[in-house]
Length: 203
Image (cartoon, rainbow, N blue to C red):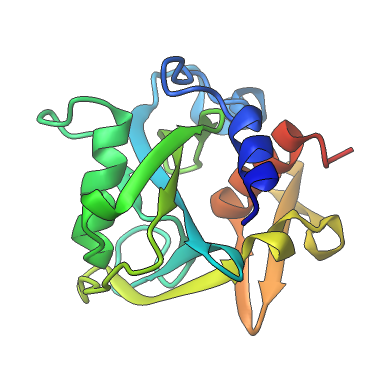
């Protein structure tokens, strides 16, 4: 990842001094399903691995036995716990618990906009650089696999697909990426779409 690309990415994010607040940018879209109740706070890490040959984004595959979103591709993260100091602390703690990547290998650089999920969470996405010499030790109770996708692939609009589905009586747009047999969709893909918008690459 070149210095120019790093600057462009960092400029596109909300600064660490200005974390996003609820409601999420998709709040209106889910109001018919979730009403106006306060969503449960959560945070994820959008891990950008700084390889010499080019940056990549790291994803996890949730264990098939998980109660929510089983088997889906996701960013590491989870609900904010009482002992967490802020969303960054939540994202780093959850990443270490799920993947084994030490928080010392991660440098947070900014935020995407808050996003609400159909499971009732308001998620703060924390973008962070991950040192390429990270070590994995996934928790098998939560994660069945960890893999990377080149950032350039995810930022290429030709690789972003959308379709409309009828769900709960309403026509809804669903985003997805297909990469080497992996399907990245739902909330995870929507957060990447938010990155596209913040970079000015999405129409």
